Amino acid sequence: METLYLSDLDKTLLRDDLSIGEYTRRVWNEAHRRGARLSVATARSLTGVRKLLRGMRVDEPMILLDGVVIATMEGELRHVAALDRETGDAVMELGRALGLEPLLVGMEADGGETFVYPRDPNRWQRELLATFHNDWRVLDVQRMRAMERNLKIVYLHDEATTAELQRRLEETLGDAIEIKRSKDPYIDCWFLTVLHPEGDKAHALARLEEMEGVDREHTTVFGDSHNDIGLFTMAGRKIAVANAVEEIKARADIVLPWSNEEEAVARFLDEERALGIGGEA
Image (cartoon, rainbow, N blue to C red):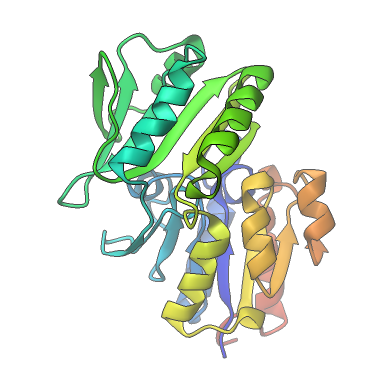
């Protein structure tokens, strides 16, 4: 059975400036031509992935928005794990008790992504919004309300405030939600993301393996950060790039000697090719 390779994007497949190196593009596409099954598992949306991976062949379904969505590059939705309106509103009310308004990623009836942000965003939200370049259907609203399908509810603030919000959310909503909280690699703040309890990379990878008829031992994943821990619990072979956090390295079967800046994933795929692994030699 052929191996299914899935790579995280930020700080893993992408360089620090969010670009794809020419070596990575060449090795990836050559592996695709040999029949390798290649995909990505990322916190980014379909719109963002299409832009970042322009010129890269990805025929396998992708894990998007940290596992909330499984979709093809052509936009075919294979699975969506969304919070309902009642739960989304409950999350936002708990945030407001701390003076916080989130960024909200929702899904419209036609499957299109909508990004909603507060009319008066905080400084970290403004910094993030400045990078979007009209990648979404972006709306600013005076008082936010949850949508019918809420993919991600995201807070950006300092470490202490996000920790307190996490405590209150867990105490009030418990197993009705999944929470991811970590230091952002690009902005000097902490992210707290609220998801459907099955909207994580671990559940998504298990579902993708079932969809694609791939046994766990034939799944190889690449990652660098805390939101990849789910991938590392469900994959047969776990590979950390050199710049990965220690929690990921501790769970890895292989820690590469190269960083994302050194195009680590492509170097590994090239070594697999030389050994006759990952597609026809």
